[in-house]
Image 1 (cartoon, rainbow, N blue to C red):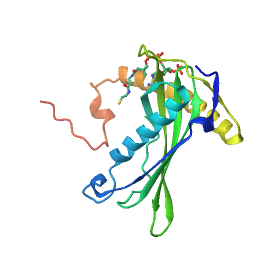
Image 2 (cartoon, rainbow, N blue to C red):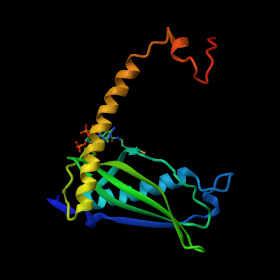
Image 3 (tube, rainbow, N blue to C red):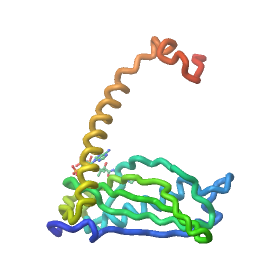
Length: 183
Ligand SMILES: CC(C)(COP(=O)(O)OP(=O)(O)OC[C@H]1O[C@@H](n2cnc3c(N)ncnc32)[C@H](O)[C@@H]1OP(=O)(O)O)[C@@H](O)C(=O)NCCC(=O)NCCS
């Protein structure tokens, strides 16, 4: 394994033309199509850095801010923002370009956590990340903080799930858009 690699070593951009078969009934591009492309670029970026096969463990902050139209060119710019021992966080900025008008819209920025796998299919230690500029440093610290928040939220969600009491559900669900009709 390499001891350390700079962010630029694995930075990857993929561009794809949005063809009619990618569209939903409303004529806009399926969110799932974009997610699939994001997963591919996350894999390419993570495996270049790790030098091994990688798997997707979790996906954060997927919010489609603007619709993507058929005929637009979608580009996904991905970099390794953070590395742990065996995991990596890949940040992906998605932009869609209308070639006729030359307008460029930022449709979303998301974060894919990937884990490197060794030949034995077990998590493998990844090379350290060399931060060469202020942006690299900012993104690494941001990812560290997001990881801390996620760990806390995950614990709170597990705790919340284990303490759900349905006996007073009528009170808890007051004002919610559901009806209790037990059968
Ligand atoms: C990801 C996976 C390897 C973790 O295995 P594990 O036995 O829990 O391994 P570990 O506990 O050693 O965790 C490995 C790393 O994953 C990270 N991790 C585990 N679960 C995580 C989660 N839910 N979110 C973020 N990171 C996670 C750990 O923090 C650790 O990172 P680090 O080494 O940088 O500290 C395993 O769950 C797996 O193979 N999942 C299936 C992945 C897959 O098939 N993806 C494609 C689905 S379409």
